[in-house]
Image: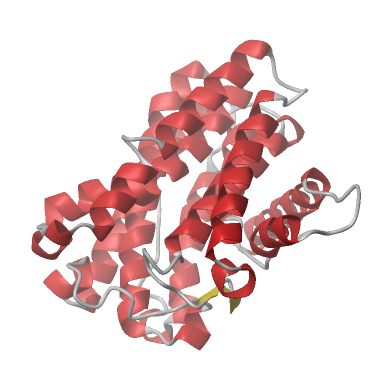
Length: 308
């Protein structure tokens, strides 16, 4: 696992460096630029962006060709976090261990920074010089799907709706697939696009959706179980909402989250093997995703193990 962790850290470092280049200042820093950089360049795991690089690598592509798409994925994710933290949504005071964007720059600037960051993401994807015109168009289409009315926007709307309080497990899972799973799916599928591996795209979408649903369930466990200092963001924000922990208890919810993360690994590994790789990075990535939660919740240490 140590070698795979080194790979993860190396890929994350590449993403951090490229993100800084993509929002490099050409003049004095103004509040809007400051707002955008405050959230985008804050310390973060870059999980979704790393997934794009891992998928490209395992499916026969080159990480360097996927780097801009990975950064576009991260920009979309960060844009969504800025909105998620607003008073009209989760009203969060902290994010990624620092004050949330609107607490520093005000709501209006935060919203505009989020729009600007989302727009920048599409621009970065559309201008990725190492991809063909067809690849760029396919990637933009996948990213649009992940954000739109079948993806993140729909999931966030349903998360805030009054009927959230009466959702059952199946309805929650659908919402999680939209709110969180869709961008994970797009991240993985973009890796297949970079690798010109059309056959792998369905497996990548399933892998990403399963990762995202499992991630969101474990995030709910974290919200119910950990302190804000430990989580690096506000917790107990799901009070009054139906979640897997509220329906099933934290122990069973955590196991369902682990199982979901594990669910798409087999198909992802098979796709990698068909491309001439061994798929180990897919297994390691899923394991790392689950184990990161156990690091924040020591009582689950050793209980969130993922295998192919």
